Image 1 (cartoon, helix red, strand yellow):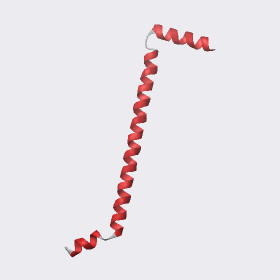
Image 2 (spheres, helix red, strand yellow; image 1 turned 135 degrees about the horizontal axis):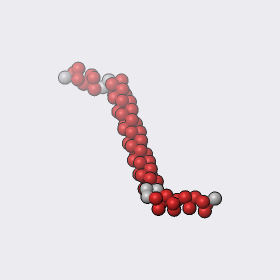
Image 3 (cartoon, one colour; image 1 turned 60 degrees about the vertical axis):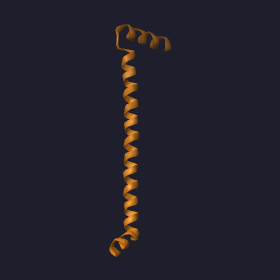
Image 4 (cartoon, one colour; image 1 turned 90 degrees about the vertical axis):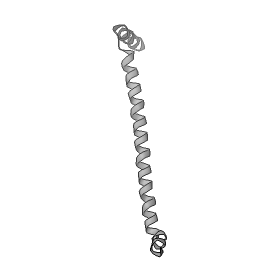
Length: 69
């Protein structure tokens, strides 16, 4: 029991554990942000593809590009 109490009061173990947990949280947050960006890009890309999916839509897009110039 005394050994367990001595380990609990050892500050090095607590700091190391805190650092490890912080690193894990940072990695998880970075992964979550990366997945959100990938999801957003996928939605944007599929929207762009859908806008020119048919010949009529491609013709409209070409016409819109010509009008812009």
